[in-house]
Length: 178
Image 1 (cartoon, rainbow, N blue to C red):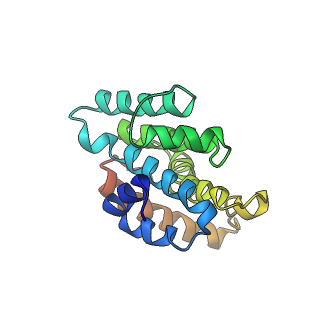
Image 2: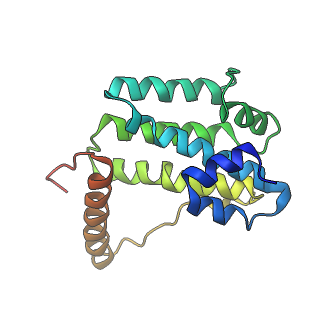
């Protein structure tokens, strides 16, 4: 039988729901809780009519992650997962910070964009790995990129393309200097 948190993920994030079915049963609920939390913070910008309202929603989630008990279909299991150590507060706070960057609508530099990418999508992947029991920092550390002149040119082109795609998806403005 599917848990209520599993039903939320199945309904709103079917791709991640299907991947969670491959997780060991004893770790699956933590992973589904993480994905439900991600859905909630991702939609903060979508459901708010103004950026300030989206930031208020994200602040509400920040308070939940920091330990304030709030009755909610995702916040309650999230608080339990945090209390049991199945999810880590710093990982979730980094996800919220990445979503706040999206709400602000502008990523000023390539380094800021990279930080946002590692904190957002990359941070979700790291948190998922940790929920599954990955404890080695080497396994969850971000990849490093060789910095020869040739690879820097390729990296810059790829970064521009990815930044443009991210901007189109999140309505963030990309500086013309990129």
